[in-house]
Amino acid sequence: MRVLVVEDDQAMAESLTWGLREEGYVVDVADNGVDGLWKARETAHDVIILDVMLPRLDGYQVCQQLREQGLWTPILMLTAMDEDLDHAEGLDSGADDYLAKPFSYPILLAHLRALTRRGLGMRPAVLTAAGLALDPASRTVTRGASMTPTRTALTAVIACTASCLVATVPASQARTSSSRSALPGCRPAARFAAAHFPAHPVSHNRWLSLVPGTVTVLRGRAEGDDGKMHPHTIVSQVSRVTKFLDGVRTRVVFERDFQYGVLQESELAFEAEDRRGRVWNVGEYPEQWSHHRLDGAPDTWIAGLRRARAGLGMRAVPRVGTPAYLQGIAPAVEFHDCARVASIRHRLCLPARCFGHVLVIREWAPNDPEGGVQLKFYAHHVGAIRVGQLGGGSSAEELHVVHHARLSAAALARVDRAVLRQDRRGYHVSPHLYGRTRHAQGHCAS
Image (tube, rainbow, N blue to C red; front, side):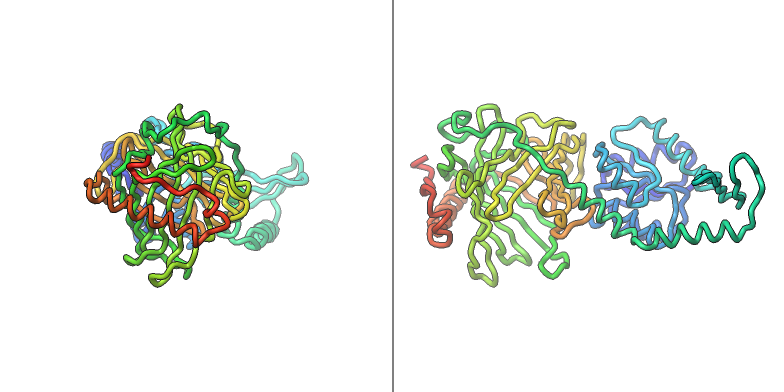
């Protein structure tokens, strides 16, 4: 038996390869979706073990493309996300079976044996409707208890009719519709109140650090306005600057997006940690830049103004199985983000390094089903280390951390000055919204 393992987690891939070879399987391995798709096309396999979260192409896209090209090798989806919607999307994309991590090795082998039995010609189920029973294997149709074979032509007509009905809705469209309809709303995880916050910003959350001087660089690709993927870099720096919003003194995070090294967006993100260790999103001032010129900041939102409300950026103790929660809402700019803890992985290896104890968060906008579902990966005392897209979307990103460090005193001072300059500029760029806030305060004043 020949098995193709498509898994980007090196430790998991090596473990699967070793174990399957001990059982007598011939194993091929791919560590990304594009290579996995190519190997599945070029070599005949008895079964494919396919991870969902893969670089370049995710498991759903690989599975869908294989089915659309007429390759019906049995596929076992393997993932750390154990939710009904994930199972449904995997099966709808063409997978034959689904196994959630962590799993026991005997159970994996049992699933593989079941799949290979099906692939070797397991007798199809008998289809029944209105008193008729159709057995595709023997090409017989029976009515009631009688076992009188019917002409093969009748079976062919029924099969053709079913095929035509299925063909009226392309698989890609059916899957997309399923994905788009599966973007539920969410509620606030807790009540946002100024009394819940300390007088000055603190940072104790292990997953999302607000320690001044922290710098994180994510690099990869993001979809542009032309629908194509382009090189993309996000530089996030925690400043010492604070700003008083909606009754809370927030910490200002300076985040800039670059495409081909050219600034596209410069954002001031206002975040605050409450006394229970929860990190809140309290507002955003994102300036849009084009050809080195400022184009405005139309997506600005501030909690407490124009019906905008703060939302949770990170739980104090994230747990799998907890309800989805609101990350923030601003009706005036059609901003409405939800999130849910998807899984906690023991290990994740990226090009820069390997991380242990990694939190995976699903994020989506209920009012933007075209955007799909985004996955963000967080490591202890590091923060975001990877960003990916689940099942496609109109704003796909594939990014991973390439640098995480503490700024020098001089570099941090430069960041503070840049933040204060952008804060002052905001009163001219967005006078009717941002202009209604207090001025940010530098290190000495805060």
